[in-house]
Length: 100
Image 1 (tube, rainbow, N blue to C red):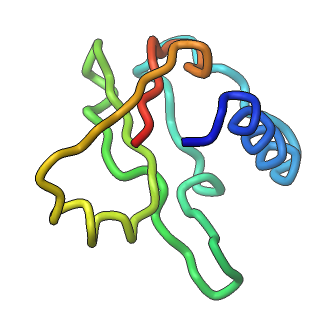
Image 2 (cartoon, rainbow, N blue to C red):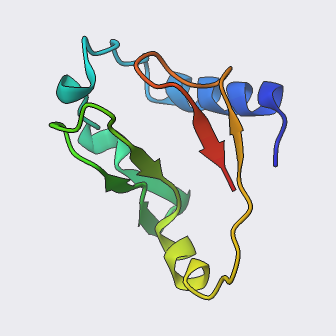
């Protein structure tokens, strides 16, 4: 798993490429992922869905799952999943970010 500094730099570069960061929504119910952020482009001819799950805008404990769509092909074969969480990278409105 990349360290926090490398992850922050990756996010900052991605935001810079997309011009400007989005304003922080007032609450979880108003949080929407804009179309320009819904796809990951690992190469010029490949688009992968980035938001993989969302418990919904009405959920007061909203959970959003982001990742590479092609990971769904191999994750279903796992017997165990080990994850690590961090609080320092969590954006406003969220408590924790998990990575695996």
